[in-house]
Image 1 (cartoon, rainbow, N blue to C red):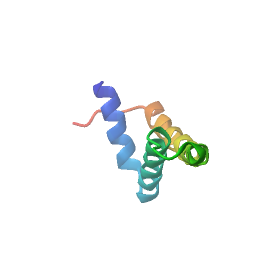
Image 2 (cartoon, one colour; image 1 turned 90 degrees about the horizontal axis):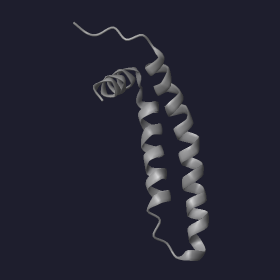
Image 3 (cartoon, one colour; image 1 turned 135 degrees about the vertical axis):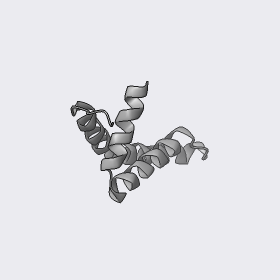
Length: 77
């Protein structure tokens, strides 16, 4: 588990404000999709928008994170 936390720390050190904004939109969209509490007839469009935003933000975030995981890590002294 520490390996995963170390990779997350390395990823965040490489992030800029745009990456963190993508992460926030991604989490918002996931929350919107999961927690939709709207009337049944409006539920599908809201979920579709949430799913589209989630997919559009999740893919680039995971691509960046997996590139960090693939790097050779030198432990800090």
